[in-house]
Image (cartoon, rainbow, N blue to C red; front, side):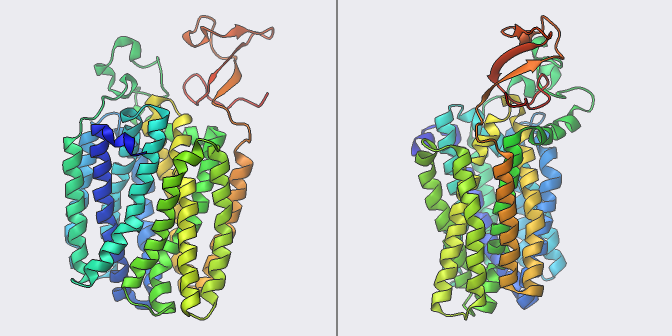
Length: 469
């Protein structure tokens, strides 16, 4: 898996992702402790609202970033996002009111909403081989796990030496280092269909390829193109349902850990880092194992099995938080958090493969932006639900409600994703004229249609998913 680091461009981009996420992880712990200082036992409700604000920024801005990705150089977008996040992080130690927490989160995550889908769309161009890209997805998952494992551990160490407000300095340093690494990377040129019309060869200009490219209002069409892919592609609709299952389980970890640890188990601030680290450890171990697993088992089987495990773990979490807060219950909570991390990683890591196989290369920025936005719509639902339920009804009820939501989402994904799901599909064309370039290898049918078989994605020539034969 580490062989992909031999690619200099990917190595620099991966380094940028790692240092930025370490900084983000420090901010996550510091914000949780800040919320507890400001709101006490109601910290879960404050964090739930803050994370809902984060999701609003993601949902609203990611599609716009996807549309800009083909018009603004990726390096400029990535660096601008990093510098914006560094500036916001510098202001976080001076926050003294709950509304200021919400404003800071909005600005910070608006920049992240521009960074992440742009980063995701660049990687398949840097590593076009399927095997290398699969390894890169696992490496990327490991980078995200550093936010849940290494960052909390580092935060726990730093909290023994400095007040938590100084953790935000580490966040600033991470974003500045990320910007420097992006600047040092040599990024590949975008496909011709992703460049403005004036910069393309005539054969690649509007009308030759992709939905909505560079026609009047093309930027808006590009922002909507990814959502159209998700509506029309069965496996992408299932991916969205799987994202909802992960969001239901992950919300209780990210929103309620500080309340569980401090108010229920009465443990010190450092134990918050330990609990988040358990989640990260489970996720990281799974990400390390996935390349070998995915070489033998289909994405569908791995992702659905993991999603169906999440409601079981949440039911166990309800029992754990209803029990007396002893040593056994604490160990059970850490195990539950680790299992949620493992199952979430098994769903999220192959998700990039599913998106990639469901979109043409030129549509990848729009597809990843849509996946980023739509998946975070799920977190927009579950984050406030986890916070408000915990504050009003208690942790056991919260775990049961989120478990029921995860179960419904996992079963929905199983129904939406066909068991037989090959890349190449036979299909008919009734709306293309004879002599159209796309019909070069097609065969006429007695009914006057044209039939052929190839890798099928939704694009200008394929508006709907074909019916099973």
